[in-house]
Image: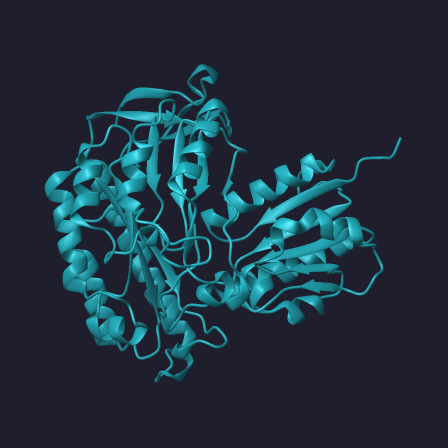
Length: 424
C-alpha cells in the first residue's frame, strides 16, 4: 500500500490568507495527504505569503531556510501575494520547488502530483489582469471562530498598496453560496463567523470582476442574520466610504452581528490622505465614528493607521495623533510604512527616515494601549456575553465579549465554544 504523503502549512498575513490556507489544507486532505504541524517533519511544506510589508517577504525567506535545515528532501511550495508579485525572486531562493500565483493556488493538488523533488523550480503564474473567478474559503481549525472569505481583490488605487497587483480585480461570491457555507459552518459547530475580504464593502461584483448582480454587502449581512446556528458575526474590516448609515443602523439592531467595526483610516491628515489616494477625508471618518457611537455607545471600533508615509512631516503626524486622540475609538493597528515596488508612493518626497517611522509607530501603539484601557474601564461591572475559546494556556482560557473586550479566566472545559454571561 502506498504511503500517504504529509503536508504542513504556514500562513503569513491577513485573515483572508488564513481562510484560504484552511481550504487548501482540506483540499489536499481529500487528495490523500496527511496534515502535519509546521514544526513537524512533512513531505511537503506550503507557505501562504503576504506582501503588505517588507517584513513578510523576509519572513518567507527565513521559513524556507528553516525547512532546508530541518528537512532538505521535502518539497517547498510558496503561494499567496508575494508569490504573485515576485515569482522569479522566490524561485531563486534555495530550496523552493514550486511557486503558485493567484490563479493557480487552488490547483495545488494537480501541481504536486506532477512535481518531483530535484526538478527545476516550477513557476505557475500569470498576469494579474487574467486572474478571474472566485474560490470560497473558510478556516475551520478552531471551531469557536471561523474566517469566511466572501470577497477578493480590489479596484482601488491607493499609492502605497500592492494588493490589487497581487489579488486582482474586486470580485465576490454570491449570497446563495455564502449562506450555504455559513450553514456548513453552523453544522460543524462554529459559533462565530468573521466575514473577510480585501474590500468587503465592495461585495457584489461577479467572479470576473464585473458588476453582474444587484447584490450588495448590505443584502449579504441581512441574509446572514437569518441563518440559524451561528450566534455571532463580525465584519473584519470595511472602508469608511463604504460603511453606510444603513449598515451601521442594521448592525445596531441585528440579532447576530456584534457591536464591533474595524475601519481603516491610514492617516488623520487630509493632505496625506490625498497623497495616499484614499477615497474619503477625515471629516467623513469622524462622522462614521460619531454615528456608530450614537447608536451603539458600547461598540468597539478598531482603526488601521500607517506611520511614516512619504511627505509625513512632524506637523502632519501630529494631525494624525490629535485626530486619533479625539476620536471615540477602542484600539489601533499601527503599520510602519515600507516601500513596495511598482507603487506610486515611491515618487513622493521627502522620504521619512526609518528611525522616525519607528518612533511614530511606538507613539501610536502607546495611544492604542490607553484607548483600549479606557474602553475596557467604561464597561467595568457590566454583564456582557463572552464566547470562550477552547485553547488552554498555562491553565487559563480566553474569550471575547460581544464588543471585543478580551477576557482571561482559569480554564473550564465546559465553557469551551460556549457563550457565557460575564461581568467585565
